[in-house]
Length: 428
Image 1 (cartoon, rainbow, N blue to C red):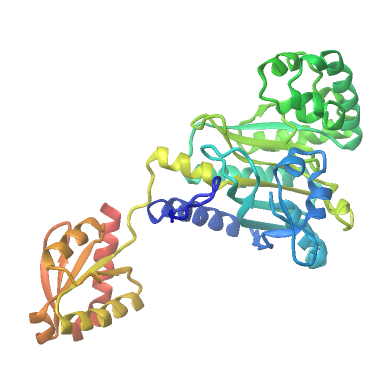
Image 2 (tube, rainbow, N blue to C red):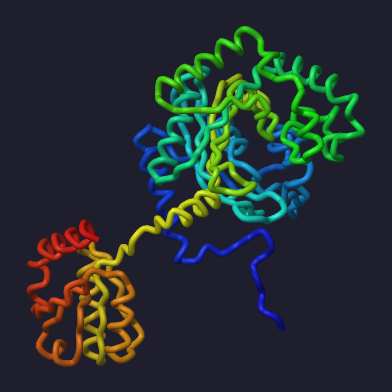
């Protein structure tokens, strides 16, 4: 019988890679916490109608990509393909609006879409996202973009480009939809098959087509920016002015519409030229009608999501793997020494050190080899002689300096050990 492997479109995140993920999550958690965003965790599966109503039945996500099934109660259930709809459902269900005029929320976790797997795109993928619910102000748009920029820059990413557009309000979009259909209809037979299907069902999605012939046709297509009403134009000007005042550069992209029906006004994507076809690392926008669409009171909102798989690829290209966090490697040989090593490891860990204890029982030479490869600052050594005398040897791996310490004296030397560890980290 053959071995069981992970399903296509899913992958294991192994320990050597997980440090990149932890780095991203740590940076995001720190910046979002300082910005007064509160974490929310929603279920990974919801009623299918949540996504049909929230995302839009005419979208590719709902029509082609969702993992939907019937549970034992004959209810239609869907693994979440994105995070916003679930957050909005929780916002309504738990009446979070009563806790304050503006709710700043963030989330993280796996999402699921049945797509063709490729680098940076999996069927189970991971996002960190933010949602600001309750503010119609263009300042909220600028704030979420600024926070995303801060996270990406703090991670050390370069060669990023912010694409910005406005798709206006529903009346603006209807005018543009009519203009786009009128322009494209004479070319219908020349469009790719997906675009032909979208022409009357969801024509704005044609702007995202990757077909070269369709893109050629779109070069002379009307721009949505020419169909914005005066209020929408004024609002977009405020967003652009606020971004400029923050020193955040952007590129106007009138074809940027995003793939979900709930967006209104500001939409944006952050792309990296260091990635291939899947260049977008962060995307979002305003969605003032979604809360009402899902049964809540009319509530303006704006947010974004960052794809973690693509960030990991960029961090790996930068070779910014965080250094080992191990402070001490502990090796021992002999029954009495190994028993004492366990207590010593606990003492050091309870004092705030990161300690890896060798459990192999192999010869000292092999254990020393693993200690050298561990990246630890120091190595504690316990053998029969040390166990008998109730001492332990400490070897600083970079210098080779070695000293003997009475086990009973170890607690009094914790501060000195911490200073030497800090010096090691500083000069590494």
